[in-house]
Amino acid sequence: MSGPASDERIAAAVRHWVEHLVVVYNLCPFAWREMEAGTVRFHVTGAEGEEQLLMALVDELELLQSDPSIETTLLIHPHVLRDFLEYNQFLGACEELLLQLGLEGIFQIASFHPDYRFAGTGPGDAENYSNRSPYPMLHILREDSVARAVAGHPDVEGIPERNIALLKELGAEKLQEILQGCLQAAG
Picture 1: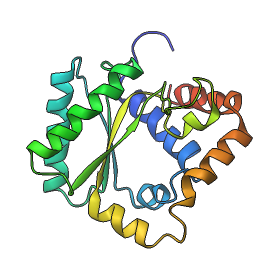
Picture 2: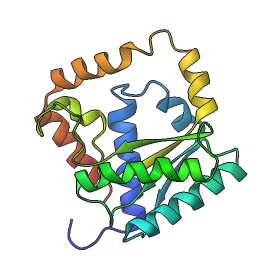
Picture 3: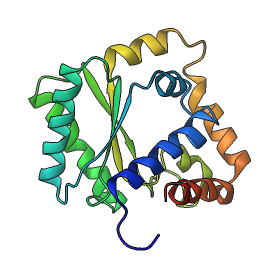
């Protein structure tokens, strides 16, 4: 891609990632239902600093509180926290924000980043791709929806192990191709 990507192209890349990696490979067995229902919001913020990103997060939390037709938001922030270590540290501020707003237990935030790396893994390990996305983002989930989905799943504890085995079988090279394909498909 040449030049900065438009918000539409960025959102399209993330949508493609959800559809062609997360859903196709069933990394999250609950994602397809919300994609089918059209209740996933893909929102790109122009935030260029952490304070602006926290403000965008507040706006999304308020929107989710006021609009029950939106099940979940992927808050995509392509201009801030491109460094994974800085991003990972920022997650504490997000949790603190939930506490300050009295929203702990109502919403939770899942993390996705192009350079995501689980503790104890190498940077090229395939299992990291369960949380690697085309752009840095915060996934805002409704706690009650998560609880219902978990209660209705026959083996929630087995999801991470199954994902790790699948991702290792696919291999980091194939997963990187899929991730790159998301960016290319969007524009």
